[in-house]
Length: 296
Ligand code: SF4
Image (cartoon, rainbow, N blue to C red; front, side, top):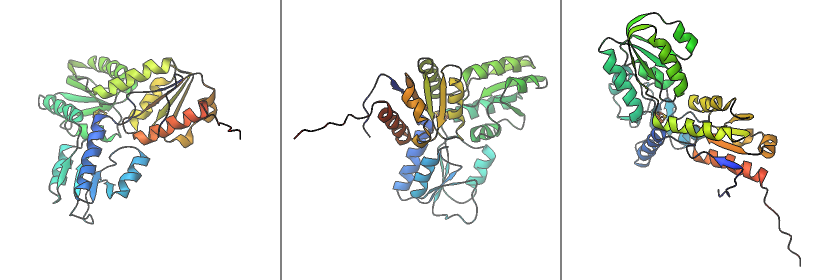
């Protein structure tokens, strides 16, 4: 899809797959292309309905855990979010080949948690309790951890002798430091590891800068994608209107047409074709193609 560029429609350079998600998808595609099928991913490879449907058509299926009814000629894939070390041992003992596509930046967070946990530090993870990456990170904390997602929750923490504060890789930096400062007050000794990944920092920085100059921000990505939802949250208060959509069908066409400047960004798990179709739709609405009348 070719779309002309217009000064009143800005598309974020950072929109779409982050390196971790892209690497995981490339690896899974390579396994499928090499005939190593079916490919079973432990949880959806990415939080995006459109991409998941496309993967299922290629015999790449998401499962919660290996069960006896699986076709054992296939392969089990650990997705970019990673898993707990106990779950890793369990799947490695299952009797099927395992491919580990954990993002190296998530691995870094896992390793740093393990490093402080063996020194008897209590771990505080700043993140979303239900998120797969956070569940994986918990497994490295030797059963001494808390997950905190707000300042209020941090205020309710007990006192610790030694505490180590880390972050979900897609957390908002200002929120992380605000919570980390609070946790510090609850401990004799506090170590803070900012494990927010660089691609997330870049995406959030660009979104904040551009949202201030636009009066309609469109955030494209799965409704269950935490990092996409966070982008939409970031824009509230910075611009007049924000809409979080999964596809171009949900677009507020009235706003997309009337806004002076539109900024389009997307989460780390939004495929490029979904972003392109939104950009195309916005462009068509704002700059409809001129019909030429040919006189005979
Ligand atoms: S958001 Fe960051 S840490 Fe998470 S998969 Fe993408 S690059 Fe890796």
